[in-house]
Image (cartoon, rainbow, N blue to C red):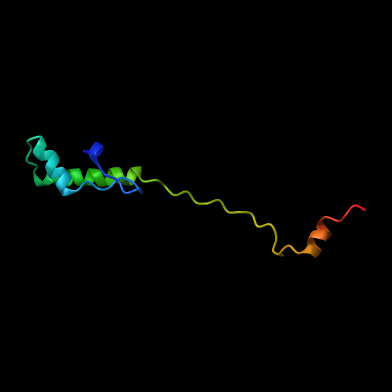
Amino acid sequence: MDSQRTGNGYGPNALGFQAIGEWARLRGLVLKQWQLDAILAMDLKRREIMAPKEEPEPEKPKVSERPLSARLFDALFPSKK
């Protein structure tokens, strides 16, 4: 079933009842309620595990509280005359 799953650009879509029903029909199966529940639970767990994890962005070091001005620049980098 997973190989026929569609996606939305953000990851795989959930397996729908139509896809599960068609899969069962093609194989000549009549699913019991607990089997359908198990397929849906496994699908949910698979998508949770495979979802990309957001990594926290590293905190950028603060360089200075003061904005850079021409006067400050000249004080930091005096001309060599």
